[in-house]
Length: 238
Image 1 (tube, rainbow, N blue to C red):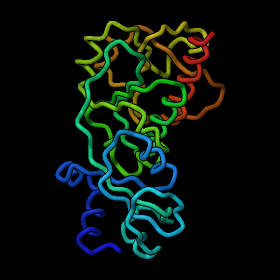
Image 2 (image 1 turned 45 degrees about the vertical axis):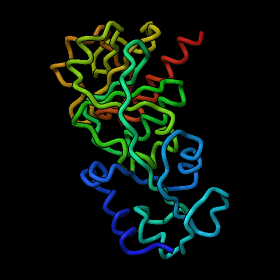
Image 3 (image 1 turned 90 degrees about the horizontal axis):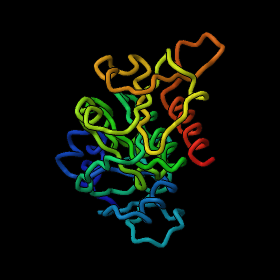
């Protein structure tokens, strides 16, 4: 059973301002909650229907009640309310995916998931990027958000202080299949609309591109990240 006050609180967490004020965010879906349960994140409450099938402590709700607190068109058995952890510190000398201006929550979630798959567990975003605790980011990450460190910082400052090689994803540059990736390094990508900000160009040590033969204007940011991660992983493992 869930009361109206709790329903109002949970629904308010769909907005960044309220997540910050309450220090809470929402996790939905069986896969994401399973990964959450195996993490160090502090869970405040779990709301689930009878068919969830997990023995973790939770508040039983009906499908109709779950529908009232879910942001999904088809609610997925379980919703968890989680405390936003205290921010950690960026690790300077480790391979990182650095994103300049990712606005689409699905893209950021996909980037986090992809980087995690290839063993890159630090993602650094510009301060104008979408919030990592946005419900759609959480959903798209498929649990990788609980295994990865995602930071927001001034990229000018961060890149200027970095001693690692910085591989910038540009429309013009050397093919990533001809580039020798160093370990550790920084892979820098920009938004689909604007690419990497020109003010960051001076920090790029290796201008790179994903070669293609079609006439599409650009690749999806999540897809581009996956291609870079795959080539990087292939090289450092050989």
